[in-house]
Image 1 (tube, helix red, strand yellow):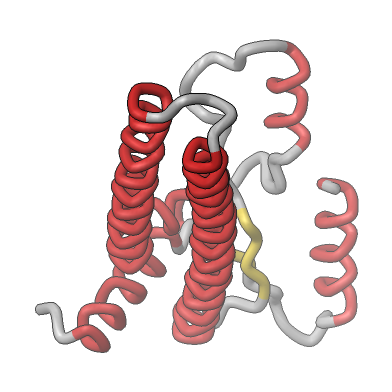
Image 2: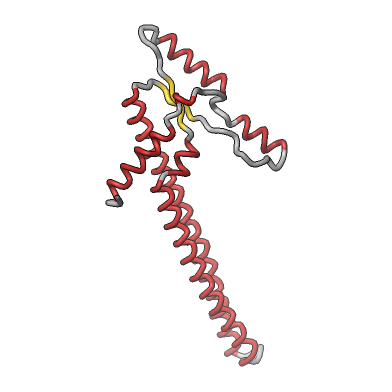
Length: 191
């Protein structure tokens, strides 16, 4: 991956011999972490998860009450017992369906929101790059500060590194975050 990226940079540099190719980097995880829209969306999704959890707990409580009622009030083998057992089975199926469909809906909305956030990051990166006269912007991040749990995880983190070194002056991360948050505040009316 690194070899391919360098080949692309060198290839562009050799094609554009008439002028200098200007390169910059952006730390996408850091931008995402500091983007207020992502923070707000995460809060909204957490509220949706809590609401879903509360509804699940309410359904469980109804099921528990119905189960106790079935066991305490009715005699097994009677028509009333069978009818109540059917109602209980329907309640369980309703809860299972609710949890599955709500979980899928929330996850799908979250995936779509993450895509929109990445699109915002790309647009802001392009704006900052054009303003600075940058030709190529590479995604650059650093290894997580904590210890890897195992050698495989560490190898994976190392392999995912796209840029191994850059001068601090090439890093546009702070400018991209600032632009994103300014645009978000302007769109949402939050000043």
